[in-house]
Image (cartoon, rainbow, N blue to C red; front, side, top):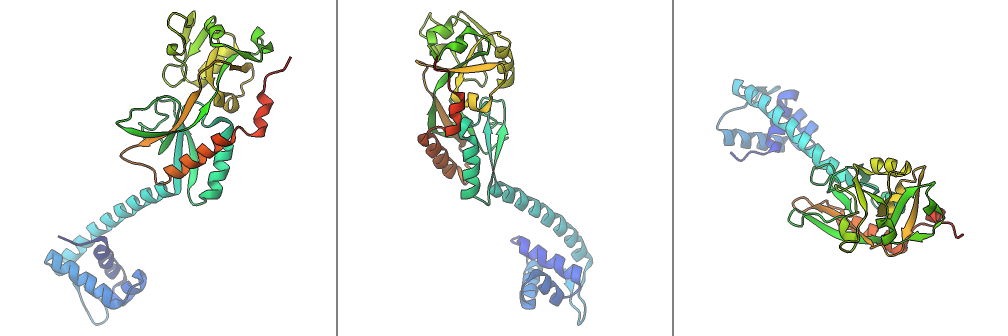
Length: 298
């Protein structure tokens, strides 16, 4: 059988309208085209589906049965088209911690101007791939490596590493700190989605104690009450200006690469446009408003 959806639509239209002329009007084609299409379907199936009359055309018993099935097929086909259409009009960008920090709003606004027909939707997902492996998003912002066999990724920028601590901590008077100083405190680490790991310190010089936390909110809550300190990308400061938590630069902290990742077997149509725009934002530097987070000079 080689019939197509167009054949089924012609059959349903003739049955619903009762005439080839009205079916042609509904389908926006000529009467002759409807007649040829339906005849091709009958030849393919080897049965008569419609009894042609001078004024009305009626389905045969088998024609009625085929029409019922055709309606179901067309409904499912329309649903498939809807899913594909939605994918073309929306790009879901996943993130686990801080999206793109101070660049997030700029990305959303520039994207809306450059791609008015495709909405950029931010999706927070607390997984190692920012929701990519789970199907929660089409592309993802990641700050830790992803499986190269399953995902493609491109580094779009580098972020400075900061230390976060309780606002009443003596460190609040400091403009910056060093990794060795951080190691002298209890360090809170999210081993699942965070960017802090013990390899950041030389062997034998790591934190004196480590406490494992869950997502960024749990991490921030623990820091705010003084349970420990944490290191993080500067994007976290912009995305989570949490009361009770102060951020300072780690002068010798290794930079954190920021990547856009996507599934190898299902690359989003506009992923390279996304990469170009985010790369441009990181190259241009932080927005002027981000200076409000700077440390005191005293």
